[in-house]
Length: 70
Image (spheres, one colour):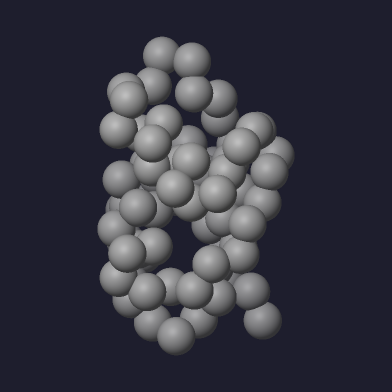
């Protein structure tokens, strides 16, 4: 299950998990995942849903899974 391109800016926290590998991905997608702090499949980071994070998440929705944390 991948994330649709509809992450909105809010004051929520997002739990972002890498679900697919980077082999064959474009360089800007690799750079985006690295900027999010993701290093490997199954790695999870928690980021605030600001404009920068929302833009990065919407760039690579097919490689990550996003859930809102409590």
